Length: 264
Image (cartoon, rainbow, N blue to C red; front, side, top):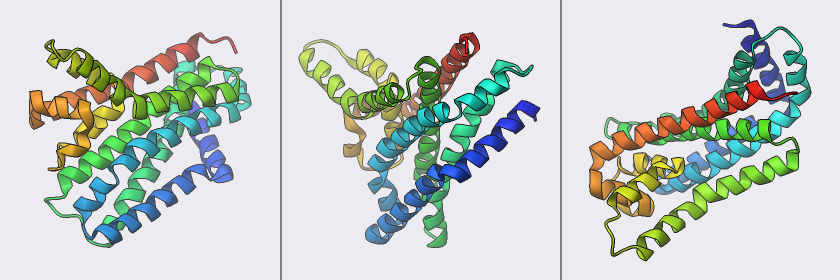
């Protein structure tokens, strides 16, 4: 492993022990998963009940923690930049140091109660893989967005405000905007535009991947229901997975490009 990446990951590990934000996040997910599992009585019902928690909480924690962590480590990053290191390697280390602990905390928090209570069965595996995989993917997506905001915005409070506004847009407002467009232009063929709008939102893509593994289509939201209706579960899942992969790559690429061009 590159020496720069090892140095940054060690620094991020020490930073994690000092602020304990990721540990509290993982512990919170563990407690909530345990409570939901006890209340619902089965692994499948617990995962479906936690759907909105995954789609709302994981992006919010990731993007706000990422922006705050970037500004907290700014002096350390500038010190590293004074050394003969490649900026691309440094950005990769910062990105992995942010998203890997958060993704691991989320996955452990969801999986541990299911393992302890022996709820993981062959029938549950597709839904479990979709839930954990989508949560991890959203961590990578919003981690990339957090670093992009951190690189482009110098003021911490302004960066956090932009991060929360972006989270509100993608998790709360977007589906309403799509529904408004659909009702306004209901006399026109909207299948392809609706699918295009779905691909523009990683949260809707994650919701589609999760709910397509269950029978509860009412939880898909309008854009997810459009994808299921016009593409079918298998093709829709493949398209959603491809779109989510693109969402992982593009913010990270944009953040790395901005980091490489920035004059610190």
